[in-house]
Length: 334
Image 1 (tube, rainbow, N blue to C red):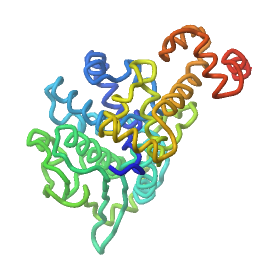
Image 2 (image 1 turned 90 degrees about the horizontal axis):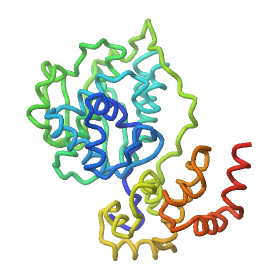
Image 3 (image 1 turned 90 degrees about the vertical axis):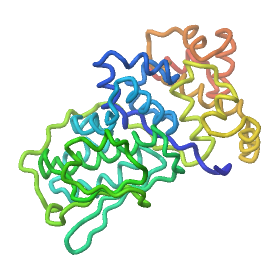
Image 4 (image 1 turned 60 degrees about the vertical axis):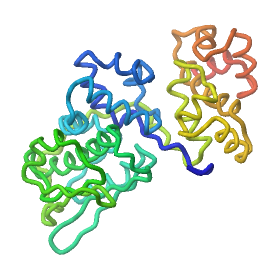
């Protein structure tokens, strides 16, 4: 990864179906602790995680639950409005073609390393997804591929019926044999090693209409920001969810960026900044969220963000915003 490349990120909402099922099974807390993720991750749908950590979480979930196809199964079982912002949006589309075009626009906003498109020939259409991550053939990568494949199939089934499956599935990495035993693959020819992940759809299905649009529980929460397109911004977005959980050390930053501490320092210097400034930005964005919770005192917030005392936090916040956190909170709440 060059210094100008952002850290590949995935929005928490993208793995919401998996988080929900793990919570129901009583294993979510254990898996979050094992993968060093925030215990309240399921309550933070608009925040981002480093992609390799999210994929590792999927792989650990599959091992813990002894369910090799867990990523595919959870997304295909999910209600449409549990599938991130794109789910509730395509639920309002009248035809499959409109839903797929909207999916191609919105899905990459949930994961900064993905591209998606729809191409047609005389008889078929291909819904494809390309990623910018280098292939590792890891367990996490296989779960990620399952998750995306399940998402694509789920969208088509909203219009073609719950038993629909593509005649051809092309995948980039070799899915586990256990994952191929699901009903979605029984009538499909699976081709491995292609440049993109893709499914075939009969072209006459594209104008299929839905007589009973899916009811959608609309969220009243403010929409999250898109993934950052620069290294510093993506590091900040990756740090915000864990700013109250762990020490924001340079070693942690290097782990997130998948490089060495010295190389990360060099990249940041070339961007005209340093690790301390990145941490400051992450702590400010985390504090902005925490200050909106009236049940938390300023001392508690300072402690959660890793400050030794309230005064250090106040000075830092005044440096960021030009006003004390108490004044900022009062203005925000009113």
